[in-house]
Length: 79
Image (tube, rainbow, N blue to C red; front, side):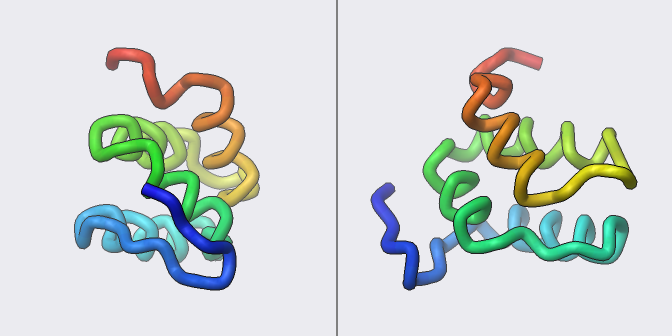
């Protein structure tokens, strides 16, 4: 899915819910670039990235870590 940096990228409701939970847990909001990257991964890969972020917990910068995982191919590995 192509997205414009100025437009919010649509995410599945469960991913939006998980990002809201991570916002509460980490005290951070994923920026639009991280949300766009997540949306472009596809459902299974996006779920793996979010699960890894949640398991890592405090001490990570949410947007940077999401982008790192996605760009490093972590999202394409099987669980």
